[in-house]
Length: 233
Ligand code: ATP
Image (cartoon, rainbow, N blue to C red):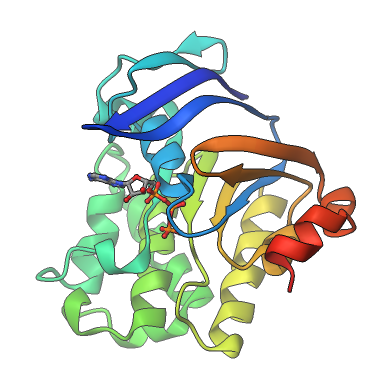
């Protein structure tokens, strides 16, 4: 479904990604793990066209998308759920969700999907008229995911869904991720919590200082001595 080939991204003099090659097959949950600053978010941002790579190729369903505009990504079926604090703080929960569906014109379908998000995340339903900036960290994370899902993506790029959240909320969020996967959404998951990520993914890639150093099935990576030592404590 997605193939990233020989991808390089710089921020000025900083080489954030160096020769990244990765594949996400339809129906998979693939995770990208690595330390702070390894380049995980940058990889997602390159795929959703929020940063411009220096060179490389990003092929989605056979089409090279590397020079397309970011808004085209959503209509192609790619949605990006950024770290939770990136919701539109001055807009209500409801408006955030409506904006997530901006590429759609089926008003009734959008309404039904919003109600569905409120069933999945009852806290968001209770706070539908609250400004997103006043939600707790966990609620903002839920909103970031729900907003991305509103575009009915085929491929969901999920950035750090567990960041800073209490264990109970993390469990709720991962149960939603598994549910989305059962509904045939393919997922590329960036996580600092490597155990959580590998427990929920089919395959994984390890990113170190902008380069991919290891890849394999999640079960192989969990048992890999290098992964254990560096990421599983
Ligand atoms: P974290 O887990 O801490 O979010 P990450 O693996 O997602 O880290 P990135 O956010 O992709 O890492 O950052 C990769 C590198 O690029 C880091 O060295 C970071 O400081 C740098 N970087 C990221 N965004 C920018 C930017 N907008 N301008 C300059 N440097 C940046």
